[in-house]
Image 1 (cartoon, rainbow, N blue to C red):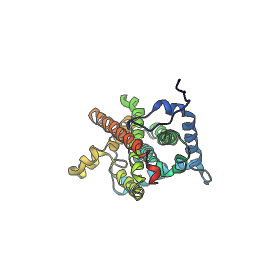
Image 2: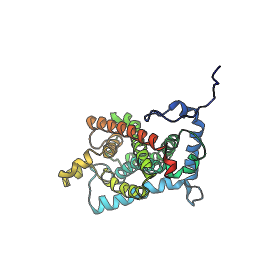
Image 3: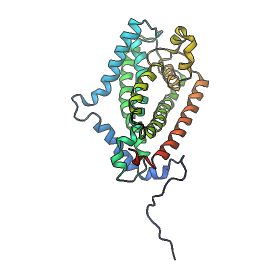
Image 4: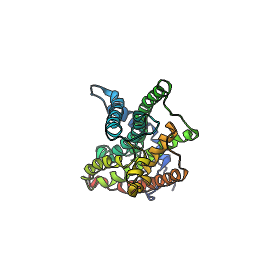
Length: 285
């Protein structure tokens, strides 16, 4: 008796650390549909629409410049404060948007997950990809101001030989947001109040990630607590990006590889916990 071959076979995952890339590739059209949905519907039925992509980082940079650089008198060296803040906010926003959206994956998509089968990991991956569009727009705005300060204000800024690592730093930010988001999304299915804690925690995390000040300034003011910033992988990425794009500070290869290792470990645990939660989350959501 010949065993009948099925076109698709749905079976429970045996290996927790299983991206199942072959199946993800088979559902690539669905992945692109999710990406399109995320890009189109975010600001649909809003007055300013996609302009919010530009308004948020620009206004935040202006406020940070007024409060931290003018009022608190935090020095950014030879780099214009506004450009210094815009660089930090641009890369931070990519992490924040990836983390915030992926941390609510199961709750936000419970209706779809409960009716149709597809690789669940497609949803958080689509979020990271769609946020690249937003990041690209904000990076373009940063480039415009960069050219303005460089050509018209003769600012002491320049790219350096490590600039080729910029895509790697963006990838690290996306992977950190994805890994942490998958961990939190799995926990939110049982503990709903974690959503409130995540929003509050993101605000605190921004202040210890060197978004609005150089690490050297923190080391001067609070040297006994500088390790909190120094070993924060997000702060390392932000400081490194500023070094790559503005040639301020110094590139630390040791901290670069440290951050890379932390990112891989975070992704590993994120995938394991996500795969475990997806088997039973529908009973608790």
